[in-house]
Image (cartoon, rainbow, N blue to C red; front, side, top):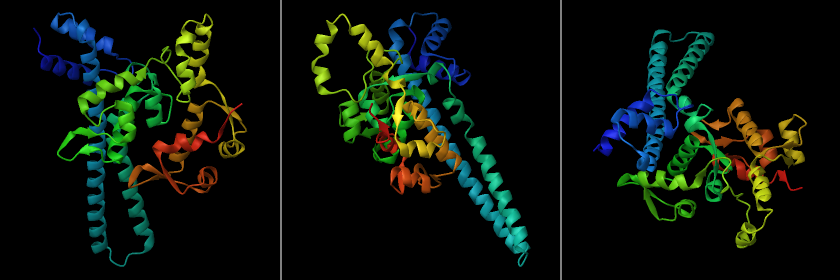
Length: 322
């Protein structure tokens, strides 16, 4: 009999040397079955949960490494500036500007290196990075109808940290606020239980369970009638395509995008919005989750700042119903 601890150790070892774009839980399970020469069909959920915990730890480690590297770089730059000041007291401003530029380049280079693990996890593709459909409750929290499982885990943890929802006495326990209560149905939840609970809200992109967050109570009441309707398969097919359907954009959003396109998918608009934010360095350096609006964003959203979680809600007013 193989112990769970042995399975976990081998699972993590295998994931460390695997390409997360192509590796799936089925591949992980088959590898473990080969290594231990046992049938793990009944351990599917357990393996899925352990994979989620591993991905979560990758995000956390990457963030910690990035922060530590940035702190070290800041200390080195401060020390370099101090020494430079003592050695070249009274030197002209051109030399100071050159030194400042070198320091900025050094920080950028080091920061890029510290993000390698995080970027590897975030890289688009199949495997654990395959885009999945999200339940209406999860859509309400993250603001989009579809995301890769890895991105869901990352955004949930970013939300937890932003709202300071970790129990001060035990960081593994999460104290649920109203949005998390609506998602998980409990007042508190630990890390392991949270990953298990999330599985119920993440579906294959072509799943019949996919429901738009705009679904009405009236639609829910008619569910039983629709199941007996012979035209139901056609309705389901149409509903499944709803997340990818092009939407009419407001004049203000068309002007902001500047491409002349008046119809785009919601996902495409959100992607372009984040591309714009990053290209123009609009994220708050002290808190990357905050966006500081330039004039174009102020004109579009009519706010000075906003958090990344609310970009979808701010955009909602600019998707017109036809």
